[in-house]
Length: 313
Image (cartoon, rainbow, N blue to C red; front, side, top):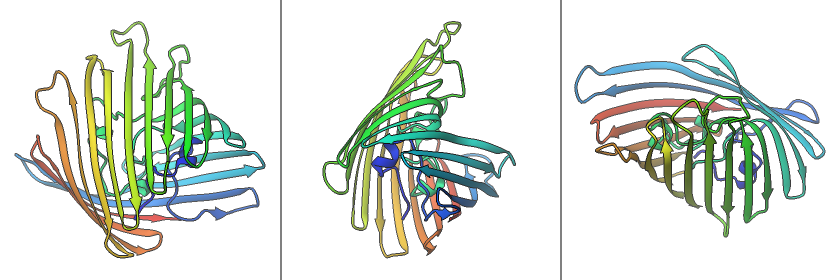
């Protein structure tokens, strides 16, 4: 029902999450897209009182500029929970045939799940995105990337000031490298290596990850599996791993359902942190999607629930 990170050309060019509806043309060279996201969510904990909250989550405007072989993108995001407005990403791309070079602030290409609600099949994100000491996926990064993309094969590499954080010190850089394969229609497989060097003043010299995922999307069915190997993770310098399995089935043109299982485990933790999610969705119109979700944290024994409306333009 929604766009996921299964558009290889857009990803290899560092375009990040893709808008789920058509762009609005402003001039011959300039267009825009965006979305409104609203939700009600709560938790029924294993012990203690239940909660229920309603909020306007996000309003985002994405601007796209195209002039010959040069293109640019800038995303502005208003976060309803804090009332703040952030410049999420902005970069310029030069393209020549299958090669492209981007410079600026752009989204990491790592991970199966998308960074925006328009790219998710459910309300919540997996344990790979919400696990120990922050997300295992890379974030929005300042730097440059180089990509080579064809319909069935793509390579990507970047040098950034920080893979997972907001540091802008290029003397302690981060790196990403990805190989993507799209051998037949509906099949995508990607392997990404992420590495960041930290300040010598800390005991945490570096952190790395190998993220792999594959998906199959054909007709009404989409399935995906993901595995991440975590190396020297966090200030405790632990190794670990994370995983995800997801299936989405489109019952009709408007109704779909998603089931997801994900977890993360570090070597010094006695038990993994795991969850299972069920999320039905309904497309009210082509660009207005409503969904519900029930997520159960298996180890913490907490039940989370949510309803969400996302309007894209």
